[in-house]
Image 1 (cartoon, one colour):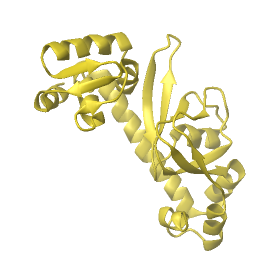
Image 2 (image 1 turned 180 degrees about the vertical axis):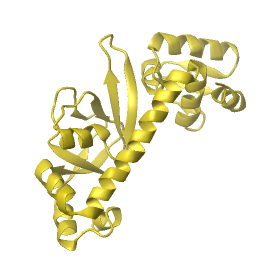
Image 3 (image 1 turned 180 degrees about the horizontal axis):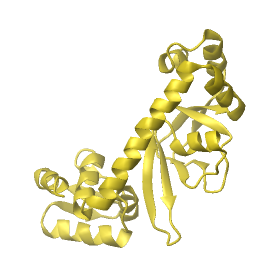
Image 4 (image 1 turned 60 degrees about the horizontal axis):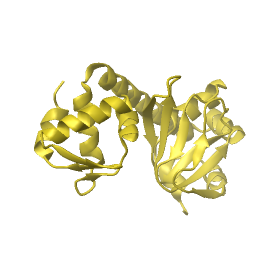
Amino acid sequence: MSGWAGRLLPGLDPADTTRIESLPVQTLPRGARLFGPGARPQAFAIVLSGRIEVSLTGPSGREILLYAVEPGQSCIQTTLGLLGDEPYSGDAICATEVRLVLLPAALFHALMARAEPFRGFVFRALAVRMADMTALLERVAFTRVEARLAEALLALAQDGTVEATHAELAARIGSAREVVSRRLEAMTRRGLVATDRGRVVVRDTAALTRLSLAV
């Protein structure tokens, strides 16, 4: 993708731009795992296309989706790991086919030290991601499960259909699979949705929208 670094990092020294763009572009299939708990970051990923989802699994096996990384965004766990030499605590899985470039740790640290445009990109992306994480904590702590589930269904629906298991929905909203199953059953009885294996069909968008706004 010629010129992508110049567009993503305007103002970067031409030599650094060329150095970054000379790195190989990797294509990863959907379902590929980029990192897992305990591993230490070896490179800084720049996503060119696709979506990577980063989740955290507790001792009980309960999973929560922390955030997604799409083009122009950053992985907070990688950034903090590289800056603070800390291991990963979450899992990163490709939700779609992903095209990315991996900046080796040595190049990342060199650019952070000498290149203000790169440093600004990293810290701006980090600030946005921290704001997203705070918003996630607020939703999990202060918003009812029904509202979070309704919001997720509306966001994920494609032509009125959500292709996701109860466990995947639970991870997205920070709840348990059993809780999501019960809430979906209640929504089905009210005519808001219809469920099938790995699929939820939205029947009443207006009612789900009202439910998503309930605190």
